[in-house]
Length: 234
Image (cartoon, rainbow, N blue to C red; front, side, top):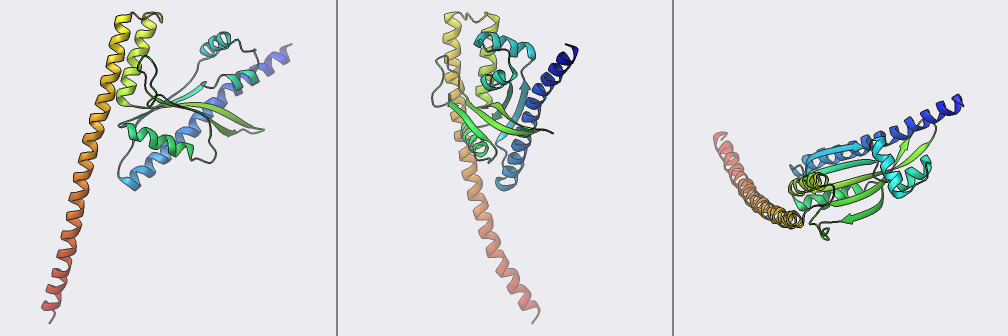
């Protein structure tokens, strides 16, 4: 009996560890993409990255809610958000860029993709959700681990954080007046995202024009300097 309990403890520790390792793997991928994008485009599309592994208590609640058998294999297969990563971006277009870059990784399998930006939830919630599967190479086996990734703008994340707090403060029974105000706030957040992206685009266009003129000036200056050098040497 004692040996069986010890073995169970080891398996439970390994069970939680693989999700921690999966988050570290995805974090590394995001960091590489972030640095490459900064180098290639002189721009960083990612503002902030946050991750978490569900606590054993939260996992147990979900097991009971979904009526899942108390088996590690069943839990791994049926609860796909034990490991979660949230990526915050400045602009909506960055959400699709980052999503595509992650989907293009050869060792990432996209299991599910839900675009709540094009199709917001009824309460106004907007975000991109990916359920991916990534291989984790342990000492004696390979674990294919599910990770949930949420990609949002800062405005979307602010709204979702506020809605989450209200949701639990009212024990999931939000008054209709607050529901209406939250939905209106979601529309305002969407309009803010649109305006900020438009301003960003305009600034980029001005910068490109300035850079082009600067390059042309350098081309004009170079021959004159060369000519002066030729005259001085003769």
